[in-house]
Amino acid sequence: MANDKPVHEIRLGRIKAVIWGNEIEGGGFRHNVQIRRLYKDGDDWKDSDSFGRDDLPLVAKIADMAHTWIFERIQDNV
Image 1 (cartoon, rainbow, N blue to C red):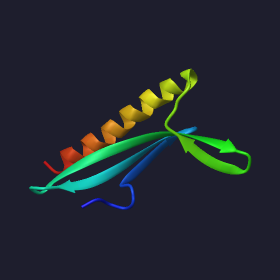
Image 2: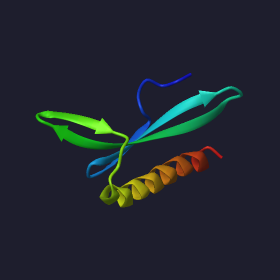
Image 3: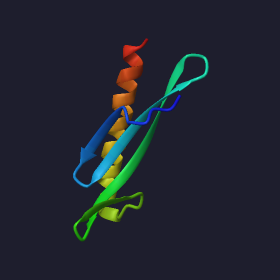
Image 4: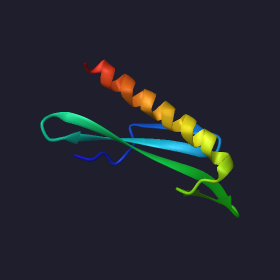
């Protein structure tokens, strides 16, 4: 059963990771991560899955942070 809200969000500057949790058959749980870049278009905030060269260090850092957050949840359930 899919959640309609993320279970966690991590943001560093303009880069954001959204972590979704989904129950799977057999009683397990799976996490999926979306990494997005936020930008302003006039007065409106938008997001993109495209990253420039200077965004990549933050993408790597936020991916590591998302991995750590998920891993800690798995360890709590062991």
